[in-house]
Image (cartoon, rainbow, N blue to C red; front, side, top):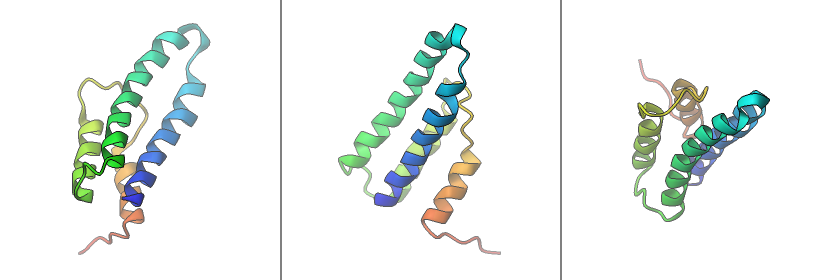
Length: 97
């Protein structure tokens, strides 16, 4: 599960380093509170990961896919394709022809 934690950390890092510093000052409170709601959803995934609620890596990946496909979530400049590419690298998954 350490690899799952690493992938989750990459998502957190992206949000904290790319999103929050780029919010315009005039609307910072409004936008930051919206993004904090998204971080709370990631926190739920993190807590389940820490408590070993995901029996398989596939369970974690499904939770992350739900996070990326949540219709209520505002565009976070998070790219699911990039997340999937990172997961393939982390888990050493190779494409088959």
